[in-house]
Amino acid sequence: MTIAVTGATGQLGRLVVDKLKRKVALEEIVALARDPAKAADLGVAVRVADYARPETLDAALAGVDVLLLISSSEIGQRVPQHLNVIEAAKRAGVKRIAYTSLLRADTSPLGLGEEHRRTEEALRASGIPCTVLRNGWYTENYTGSIPAALAAGAVIGAAGEGRIASATREDYADAAVAVLTDEGHAGHVYELAGDEAWTLADLAAEVSRQAGRDIPYRNMTEAEYAAALEAAGMPAAFAKLLADSDRGASEGGLFDDGRQLSALIGRPTTPLRDSVRAALAG
Ligand SMILES: NC(=O)c1ccc[n+]([C@@H]2O[C@H](COP(=O)([O-])OP(=O)(O)OC[C@H]3O[C@@H](n4cnc5c(N)ncnc54)[C@H](OP(=O)(O)O)[C@@H]3O)[C@@H](O)[C@H]2O)c1
Image (cartoon, rainbow, N blue to C red):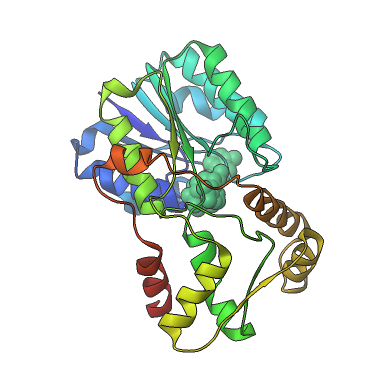
């Protein structure tokens, strides 16, 4: 059995490879990376696989039984890139694909949903048995900006009262490994989200409690939030995307209470307070 992981140099991919190493023989794992030098420390076989260069993908997927396709970080390019991988997987005779999609990608109000919907359609059309891991938001998306919130004296966002059932990359990586190492998940679509849901005001309250000073939540319109992110140095397109995602969150797009993630990983998801503690210690 050969299990290959794309995006193995990324934050999620690294966790998946590390966790796979504890569960299956090293010879069964292949890390796929567009820049193999970046994957040299992973301690498993590395093959070149660039989503945008189909000529790399046939050799990358030769002999692979199970493939984890981690969605590309190149937003706007993802559909053709993912199609390249799916077509190559078909040619290579890959027996099962797991794909990291977005929470309720089929109905999500987030603009990000479109590329995931189209990728899921292509997976279904490929005829390859697949497992869709519809990942909700990473808690790290928010804890990463705690230092900025402390410096500015406020958590900012545009998610209003929207409740966000986030989980850590570690939680989602455990789910991916559970799916990759057990044949029983073919044909399943999992809505993966944290056990606990919170608003950005709840996040601000938790940061305030742990930091020992008042850091309120300041809600903005989508346009104001995008402008604030851009003023802080974020590229305009990415700022727009994050503001759109907050708008989607305000409409309930990042809320879920199905607890499929904790069921899949056999433990509760990481509580927000633990992630805030880690970020403050960080
Ligand atoms: N659920 C969420 O909250 C959330 C948040 C952010 C992103 N995401 C999605 O989840 C994915 C994994 O998250 P992450 O935190 O691991 O992201 P990440 O750290 O940015 O990793 C992205 C990975 O994709 C690889 N990649 C990008 N373009 C590629 C290409 N053309 N060919 C091959 N590999 C390519 C990157 O390779 P390099 O190392 O060479 O750059 C990297 O390994 C992201 O790519 C994105 O689609 C989800």
